[in-house]
Length: 478
Ligand SMILES: [Fe+2]
Image (cartoon, rainbow, N blue to C red; front, side, top):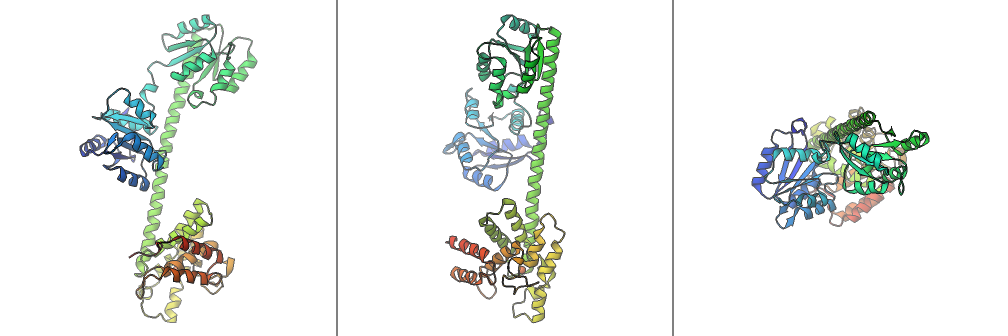
């Protein structure tokens, strides 16, 4: 089985305080495609999980001062690995250990010394790439439910060679049986005392574990209406009484085969969905990296504005968040903020970095950067406002800005947000001729600019952000 599973790109975080065991794990996973990240401290694991994405976490059951079950609870409480399967790795060989770990919420269990096949199988099962061996007995199991003992005996005789057959005499007895046993198929009589076949199907149709078990109803010739009702309740087929051995065998084997195919298909869908999710996450990470790299390139052009684009992007996103904009809009405005000054690339270095007073001509050249930026970003259609943000971020609410002198709400919304964030960062960054300005002073300037330089609504939000920043963290740090 292991040879067929493709683990390429699967990221596993291992938490084990024993370096030797970590080395062994590395060797076992070598060549499988798994990307292993390991740490010996629970604290470090928490940090890694909150920063990075993993597909599986493996936890040694006995870390210094804390056991694996407590640690799993901590990870779940902190929501750092929601939806990520966690496997217990333990030297505990007592028979009940596995049940304890599974009950505690671990998705799997491997004991030390780790066997490579068991490890890969547990990984594959945890990732939903295949089912556990104990769920797939060699002989398929069939539960026959019928109040007529003769029917039960006949069915058992017909099926005993090919299937593991269990028999019960009522719907209630079937429910009890299914509480503790898994079956692959149910043969269900319709007319039974206490709980008939219909009530039985009604009962299990909302139960996750039971509703997917295929049911074949056992019917008499005169039950056409019942057959329709059975289909509606989820039955997959019928077998008429009295039973004909060959018909019964064929119908059961065909149903089980279809069920197996459905399950294989589901596994394939799970696998493909997983790889697509991985690919999409990778592309998102790449997009973020490309944007941040571009922002770094823009800021490198101007030696006095180190990190400016990143901070403007961050402040713009904070304003968008307080405006209750959607997650997508917040993300878009972050990217718009990152590239708002991209037009500076087209302005000569000696003008951008000039420390003495600019001439009128030089200032006119500086003022071309919004339009240059808009042209550069014009083709980036996935974020339509990105070019707008670059073009209008130096407009002023009172119409005295550039390049077009737009005023009020004629200035696009994203540009009004970036305008406030941009001015805030200019005052809270170091310059060649001064340090970061005092927070009180900056607050006063934003207050003063409400309705003149800035959109009053967004300036007010910036003021609230300043007021909640008690330690004056939102500034350039040397
Ligand atoms: Fe600018």
